[in-house]
Image 1: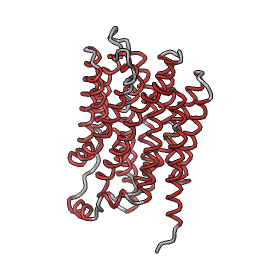
Image 2: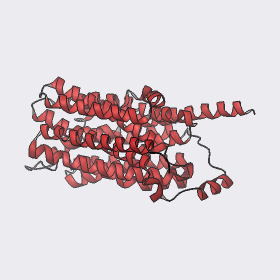
Image 3: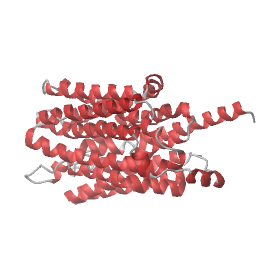
Image 4: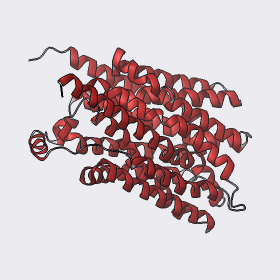
Length: 406
């Protein structure tokens, strides 16, 4: 086989892998918008008079993603990507089951634990984007990440629609049907993942590669990784912070639950729809510029949200929030993917997602507390200082790259 034929075959296989992972992202990933869109409302449903902890189940979900990041990377490394991802679907189904039982036997903390288990399953889903990049030629990496995340367009429709049609399925137990549906999503996702055929590394090559791996401390202190992690945390934590409070604010302003669910649907659509071309934009303009564009969109979200409390203002702000997340997070992920060697991917990806989703969990918990103490406006004012710090991180990286080598 000629070199050109080998390259062409590798490119075809990378696209096939990305397509399967995108399909799995579309189905299994729908568990996340279900948990996030109704986690706070279900928390209010389970709590008594004091509703300040209503968003704690969503925090549980994000804590689960954070705590599951390193174990998920280790399991995937041990079992291979197909076996590891199939394990994730089992954990996702278990989380859906526990959350459903907690609603039938009303227990707030058991419900929060169920969402934490669901989050651990979500940690495996977060590895899909890295798997697509790791199995793609260098020129296709950013596009592979975008292609997988484009599967989220289906989650934008499927997740909220599942909530709308199933939240009263087991009435008078509200929302139990929505979480029971996650078991079906996990089963379908497992079938899709069974078609993966990612090759294993040859033993000799693996040994050479492992010997070439740098210490984690050396990798995570490099300027490019630090700036990428800073911007990923800023983009994702702000998205979680504002989005978590949005359904509470909308219902609190007298809008209907369906209005809130459709707002989340538009938001999730905006999160993933640009993924069809975000990779191409990164390839053309560079990841740093795309991250900066995402930060500008996050600022625009806060400006619109602070302008009023009409339905169109909530929805427009949520759309801008999703677009800002897409550019900021995919751009930062592409920067991270360029910062490690193949032999280093497991530990770097696990560390990255542990820090990222630990921060996101804290943001979601603070969302409920800030909303109850100071209202919707304060949630959006906080966007400005965080984005400013992210711009400082990008600026510092730029200055470092311009500094002459010694």
